[in-house]
Amino acid sequence: MLITSFETTITVSTHSVDEFEYEAIAHLDADISPALPYLNATLSRGIYLPVKPALSWRHEGRNIGFWPQRIAVDHLESREQVAEVIQQLVDLVNRVWDQRAEIEPDHTTHERLQPLEVYRLLPQTNCRACGESTCFNLALKLVAAQAELTSCQPLYEDPAQADQRAALEMMLASKWPAL
Ligand code: SF4
Image (cartoon, rainbow, N blue to C red; front, side, top):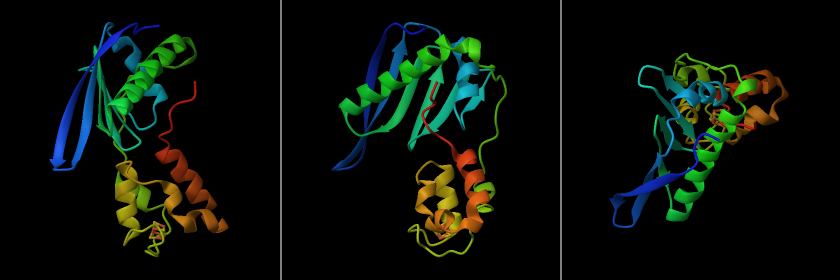
């Protein structure tokens, strides 16, 4: 186990009278720099900057940052959710660290996924079944982790789209890693 304790500071960002969100930083008792290349190898769509070092990750519409002695996350709805998500992230770092012998560390910086790459694999019919006016709009939201691929029904209903769907699922995988 790398992180044994942490303290969380919470900030409230107000967008309007009744619209606000929580941002949180967990201040860690350990330097997690050595774990970042293992996290980079494990997290889909993470952006690792070895010089800082830092790793940013989009998960469930949230921006998550891993630094040597802190973890930051935004777009949280309540203090209960802050506690839950921060604990999940700490557990994730510890799990990856504990299983590092089975993981090939990745010290490279991956390119951020581009909307055009996603758009090329969508049906490009602009049918609006996903609620977006164009396929490109859905591609923009998919890249920003603000939409789910399953909202494109034609991709799942048309057998001719199976290969594109599989490629997109791999490209957009942002699931909590099962280690
Ligand atoms: S449902 Fe799929 S095909 Fe239709 S507009 Fe949305 S992304 Fe395009």
